[in-house]
Image (spheres, rainbow, N blue to C red):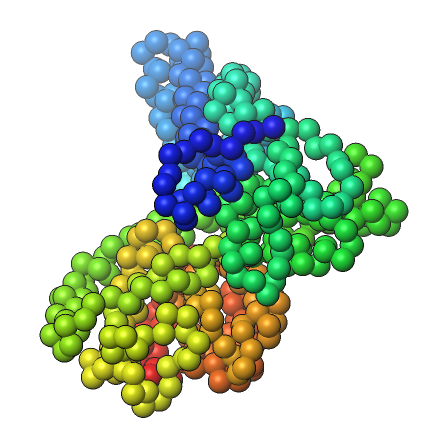
Length: 466
């Protein structure tokens, strides 16, 4: 069992984080293993062609043999990144990792042969040298992967991932290598009507890769919904799984577990989204710096109050974060909990505030939230805890509301470009946004993010901005 991390922290908020740190994050260590495997795979691939060149073509022709390996290497890496050669599953299962690496090598070799055939350049290469080089490279790949196993175990442990068994009054199970905790001891309650409880669950699970919840029947639906928004692969024990032979389930000992949440985006997708966010947010801050400075100056000169409005919002994993906006309301009249949403001709707005809200300039400081990693450029919009749809809190309208927090919140999203924005005077206003958010979660691609950003430029000024 893993021990909680010992960290020196003083503030109450940090003390809560310390208490709920169940296991250290393995994300960075796994990334180190991926990079080490990439280097080892490339070294093995090039070594195969170099040795083949030395033995078959002679010492003076090693460079010629390496050219083929150099052409093959980028194709191999491209295929390997897409077929799961560098994934948690491949780190955990050495046989699966080797088979995926060999498949990537075979596909990249086939691509080289096809390119040579289509360009009629095959005659320039020795078919035996190419085939033997690929075969020898495959042997080096197998050898290097076997040697890397001890490094992976040293960096990430034998299990390579943080698995958690969370007991909330259900039957006990034995999951080798998993951390076991008691929900009651850590005061973890899947109360879908309490954002603070959901925040606490999100904090506890923030470094967990997979969680198995053991609880009574009456709590399973609540835990299933809590896990959907916690950005973690989650399972709930159900004794009927074994009896029914259910699909999308697995057996742990003599208990069955139903998969209820799929966890975060894959490593490649997360890397693409984060790099895209960082590049675009940094570029936007540079380009828009005159607008940011002039807006800050105008707000300060109007009434002398603070430039920024900082509000607690619900972010990824149902955890709270501080979101930045330009202050648009009079000092002392800002609503931290958003219990009263801004209305048309709202007398709380300053003159500058009316303009920056109408043009969406008030949202620009959230670019800093993107750089900090709390937000993304595209995703479900973050909401304040006390926001109402009609006379109900958002999660009271539809409990699926918590599911939308499985990705980082965004400056814009699918709901915004469809016109579902502004005040939520009726329950339907929230349901339209929620449906769009859930649709976005199910079908994420980087191209869709780019499309949403361009479409957002068309709706920066709109009739619901007040």
